[in-house]
Length: 507
Image (cartoon, rainbow, N blue to C red; front, side, top):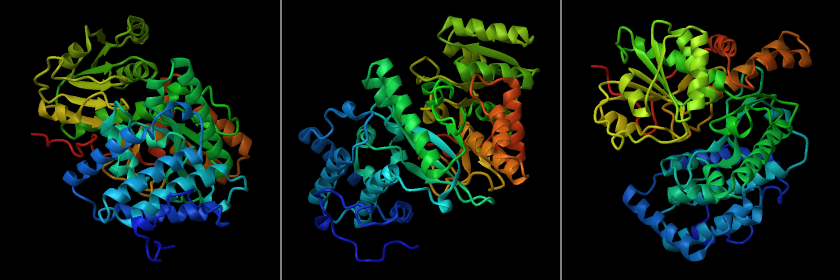
């Protein structure tokens, strides 16, 4: 299949009424989605307007949004999927851009953005049997990180719908409100003829900010369960991994309602990858202390597990812990004492950062280092597992520190290679993986391997469920995921952080 070769319409010719959909024309929704995926790849290669003109366009779109009121009452649609509501926003955006910026925006960007809407709804609403050609092995279900308060993540939406580039970052998530769960990207077909899928779980930080806590939780769980049902029933996946904040939303997977999938939080893969990142930091010369202190900032479900596990993995090191909740400090401290670990409790987050050589962040809030009184990091190595990020990588670099996200890679290129989506984050858009993402892919590969050996499906599923993480990750659970990582060649990637693609060299 190739990019559309028929003459592309000019912006003035693009219909602004109800969008024609492939389903209206009797086109198979998967074939239409293939065409959309090809066209969005083509759109990424187009010459785009420069930053100065882009800002003019975004400012104009912001003004149009304010004057038209098109984004009013968004919260009423946080748990609804409404094609007409989405088309009002998208058609209005197309009309505004076509009227104000004729000739600056390529017709393929208009066409692909329309296809994004139509194929997402058609796939979600289609009730026909799933096609064997598109059978999935696993789904990685994720929220969007961009929101009114996390504007730096606006880039993550642009590959999906090219016109999102022209929307101000603080408004991009609002343009997704009303969309159903949809395929963000696909993984390349593996040796078993199956592929994985990245699926949007219809969750954003704006939902949490705009709704009462219980309403936000109920809405989030409903949307994530719908995304999982879509992945299982339409794409046939057997394993589902929960990305970023979704393990918390789904009670570490225990509130998933679909019993036909194997759910995993990804925390085992994340913890294991943090351990391996510390090892790699030593091997690559970024950490040179003889007896380093390793700080763990944030002692929730993942942070507490990290503290316990790295104290076992690195018994020669002292673990420094801190959380704003004294109960979490006490609970984690008791666990460390029980395993006779060398640890201390920091007085504050700043005190922890100051005292540790390696800092692992597992908190949900941002820490502004300079505002906190830190003016020099003296080469400290920061591992940021927070999503959105706890630290600003540019600020870390400016203070003579080094920072990486917890990123692995499919070194063999056989377990989870994405087609082209990089979350606006990854150095290698295809092979770089989040730890939670790699965990889901590895479990799916293990399941398929058991089936290939002739094991009955129910028995294979039972075995894989025992390895999947659906509670606080234990040392044994992390070791099992680590064994799968070794088996399927998941290793620490090149150290990288959002907007800082490579670390400063070691002097």
